Image (cartoon, rainbow over all chains, first blue to last red; front, side, top):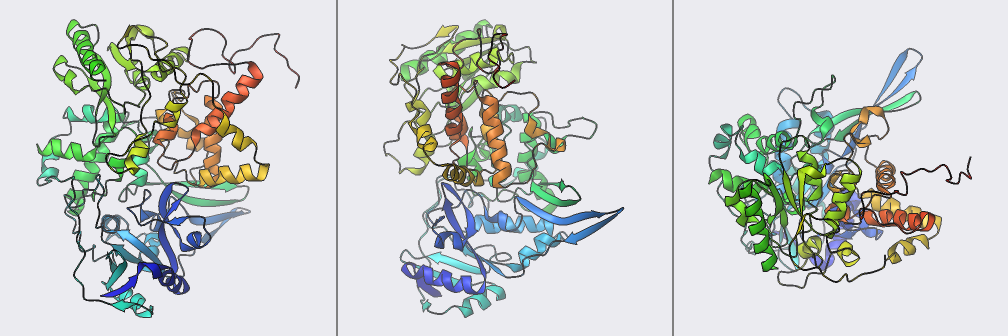
Length: 333
Length: 294
């Protein structure tokens, strides 16, 4: 395994930044997220490796706001300008296993066998993921319960596996892309040390049979209990690494316009609002039920995997503590 | 605190058993030690879920809006700020007092759950900023009251943070707010938890109107923040919930407090939510009002 001392991390980043666009986890005025390494160099943000970031790295695949194409009215004709994709490979350093798994979930949606989303595909091809194994899970983390491997990142997404050895980081190439990237780096040490110890997760529960159980629970009173306190804000959906619903809208100024894809949330009123004014998911109950069932039942039925990866962000950040883990435990009984 | 908790449970039990209330809204313990979260109790058998501790921050008054079209008679536990929020909702004609039973609970200030989440277990957790600045810890309106009134620890409005921003030059101010609103992810948690944000149809839920683009950038986000601040001006009861729930740590109360300061200066000292009658600074008109700009 290749290694680098943490004290020399800057030189590693400098090398990566030379060959690639480089995104690292940062703390920007209290908000943790992935951002260009240049923000760290300029002192705008601080490198943040103490835990997972609040806004997940899905932003590097499905930005919160993304231009799909531009258009311009020319008399009675319309000129379309396609958007250029990423022309340069982009390294994401320190993506946690849960977020790597989440990208696999997004693959099911955006790289569907019938339709491949070109903008997503471009980023998927150009991104090189350095996935960092967590030694110190937070009290809200429950990825193990959702079936994740804490020692090995999702191999279809991660390109380089990173381990934290305290004073140094260890790197193991997973994909060809990852190997090519590691091969370009100089000044790395070599070690055969065993994998670092990982503290056990405290939030643990059984999820066996969950999708099947939920199938018969559409009208269960449990939804009243869990939805009562929900504010119908979009915090959970926006910080969730697997929530991927978007809206498409126009931004038009005079004769030019941009077709925008922006995140949307099933908690919002406009999400299901019909053109005629009908609202099929009128209230909190219908919306909370939809979100939980999408995560824990519908996605399983369609893709044979859960749409919850156990990152714990919603548990930590929900303003009113609507806790999906409590819900799962109550359903499983 | 435990005396108040047992009194809460006893009160809830009595209200539900007697049929005076069909629903009691209080707090229950959440996932982490620093999570106390709203709970709706419909059966006297469940009253033991109710708790009272130093994290019962969440304002419960806003939940009364959810029951305006039901047959329920709803009892809520209400701290000083919750009762000011209740008055606001009454004044905005969003709820009707005869459907509600307000059980006042004097409050000694709540701890910051956000701070607690970042501190090691067992560390001393500071009081929430809004609570530190609270001047009305005792319920200002109630049908019943539990516990003894406390002595307010703060008697004057503290505008030192607002003054620090006012002292900046224009460019620095613009840079400061741009930086803050670059972080906003427009989840609308601040709006949805706010007792003053109680419109049936919010401007930000009408994207086809074109008033606010769904594009996310510092400019659009600032438009959101400023519009909301203008709309709650004169009605903000300083519970600070907006800032507490913000996942991006935007200092939302700074702007709300700037409006409060300006209202005090321009219209005379005013405290939102203390009364349900009488003139409100920004929605009251008199023929004798100065119209210098006309």
